[in-house]
Length: 292
Image 1: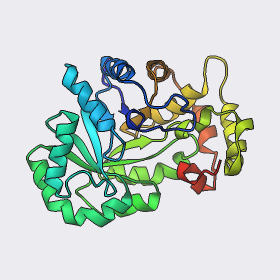
Image 2: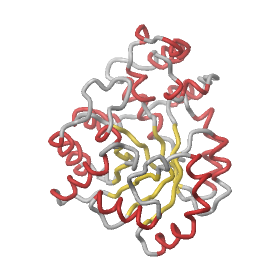
Image 3: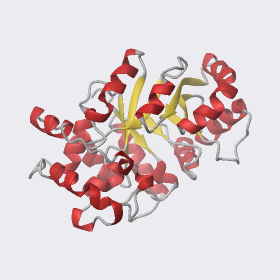
């Protein structure tokens, strides 16, 4: 099996996360099962962050006890004060917590952090790259305007952004193509819109009601044997300009379901229908704006 495009997100390991997460943080036994299954199925990169509670520590515990070694993306967050403010010391402390020798990517957790701190840390980050302590520098962004700004910086090699059935090619396609021309690696998140695609539409309250008709259109593209999980994941996974797709899971069963889904296909007609859904209230595609 070739290495697949999935990256396993680990925010769930350190924080209670997601609109449908009823079980809270998984136990260390469950984390081990999830990570073992991921590694066996050629998922080799984990995504974490300084701001994800004790997620980094949980990964470090796994690495300490397992022969499996994942590549790691972690993220600088200015709001995290328990780590050193000196960027070299901070990166080395992250490596110690994660029980690894180098980072696949050190990412700024937000455009705001990038804008405020990149100039300050640029020189030292490039030294860390030269020393192969960091392989790539990245930024996690939300809007297309933020991505436009980041594209002005040649040092950035990885961009992480939302991309899903509603935050789709009609919204993101052009700017992603522009980034690819600069040979930037594109990682997408929010493939299931934090679990909203699985929620029954009659349970939508507050401003989520405005998403209802678009999500019903998506649900109508599903059928017996081709569920929402298959549709949502394949729509993103099959995009040629997307290098990696970030998913988060709470259980081994969810991970296995996602691995099963990527072996299915998606029809041209389904893709066209999705691309033609142009949901204009963009702020509702950001879960931080949901009023439940």
